[in-house]
Amino acid sequence: MSTKEISVVGNVIRDKVLKYEVHIIAIILLVLVIKYTKIPFSGTINLLVLSVIAIIYFFSAFQENKEVNVTPTDQFFIKLCGISSSITIIGILFASQKYPGDGNMLFIGAFTLILTLGYIIIQKNNRVEFNIFGKFLLYRIITLILISLGMFLDKII
Image (cartoon, rainbow, N blue to C red; front, side, top):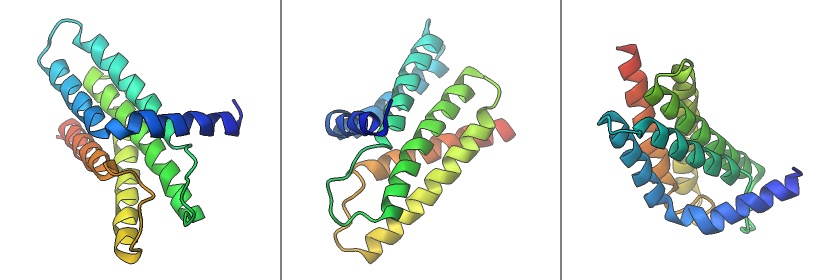
């Protein structure tokens, strides 16, 4: 796939899927509840749903911005947020399925999401019209950080 084709996929995901960000977050939480209640086929449901969401977040990193005031640093953090969201979702999947390597993915994903959250907060305070990141992106970042930190601490303790 060329860079242009990937950005087309990223734009479609931004325009069609990410406007339902709150629903995606609710689905993540629902799938985790289903997994931990030991409902039949919950592992398969968990695997399929979280894999699809990770793919969606990965391709959302390659969207093109229509805004004029996007700096290269903004573009970097857009990519970092999408890729780290995908890594965090895979880490959550690995932790819920008890696969090896979950701690590394949870730590790296949460750490990069914390960096992204810090950048967004600083830029929102410094720039009056900072609408580059999606409306519900902060909900996604905070939810994924909390879930991954909870699973990471559960693994350590």
